[in-house]
Structure formats: C-alpha cells, structure tokens
Image (cartoon, rainbow, N blue to C red):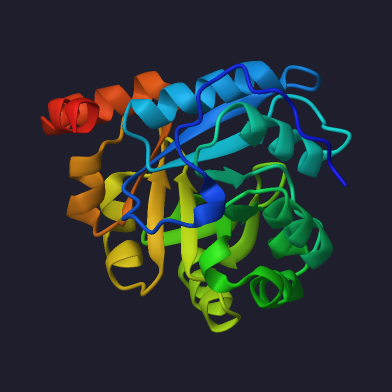
Length: 239
C-alpha cells in the first residue's frame, strides 16, 4: 500500500475520474529517481499549457515505477500515461492501479509479440499505448526499429496490422529524421489505429494532413508552441 504524500501543488484534476476528452497533444515529462516533485511541477505546467495527456518518461532507471507515478499524482493530479517500461500485464496493472490513465509499451512488444494481447487484456485497449520507432530502409519501405534503433526487418505496416489484431488501439509512431512525411501518408491514413506522431519540428497541421490523431511534443513549452501555431493558445489558457 502506498502512503499518501502532502501535496505542494493544487490539484488540477484527478486522473482516477477517467474524464473522457479528445487527445490531440501529448506532452513528455522526464522523471528522475528521488525528484518526483519536479516531474509533478513539469506535468502540471504541461497540462495547464494545453496538453491532453502527459507522458511520463524516466531520465534514469526507477526502482519502483508504480510508486513514482503515485507520488507524482499526489503532487499534481493530471492525466498521465506511464512510459516507464512495461515487462508484462502485472507491471501494466500496477501502473494503472497507481493512477496512470494509460500504460506505454515500447520495443518489449517487438521482442515478445504476445505482450500486446496480454497487456490489452489486463488493462484494456483504451488504457494501452504502443510506441513504435521506424525508418525508411528502401523506396516505399518503412521498417520498425528495435530497442537499439536498428532496422528489425519487420515492415511497419505489417506490424501495425498485427498489433491491432491483438487488441492495440493507440500508437505513438516515432519516425526517424531521414523519413520524409510523405513516406508515412499511406501508412497512417490506411490504418484504423489512433496514431500520434512524435518527431521534433512536426506539428498538428502536419499530423492532420497525414491523417494522424495528434502529436507528441516536449513539455509545456512544446505544447504552447503547437497551440500558438494553431492559433488556439488563448482558448486553451483562458477557457
């Protein structure tokens, strides 16, 4: 049982209420061991800047990821997705029980494809996000990258279809800087998955043109930049 902490911040909203809202912008926040309060401040800032979902990522290995999520949410109650590594359904349930709205599975699923079905069965497709890195390996060919950013030999379209069949609903797609946006056009548009694009310099307008559900950006500043480009900042901050 996790012990409650005294919050140094005002609560913004409780992710435990599972309030449904369209997710257009995900913002990343780094969490360091023993420095949860700083991650909480960054998460709250990102949320107030207009982020629909905060992706919590470790800057160093965490001894107890579930406790880290619990402590972050005690300090700043914002909707978070735990992108802290997911070894299986037990880890996924622990992170959800700690208060995360969603759990992110990365290259672990590439090594063990059955993990997709196991995690989505354990916490639900709506609470599972699958992060996929990819790059162009030949004209018209996009391959998934493995955990050390090397081409896996698995075609990205094929992998998207496979994980969808196993229960996936939401994907964060991280194209390499050498992959032109037009190389993703048919890949994204023809998929029934909710795909969010993560690449520096890309914006919501480009995501819309490619048929993506939204974009992943870095922290509060990245979120503000996205909304300023869209002319939506006044609505987000004053509404």
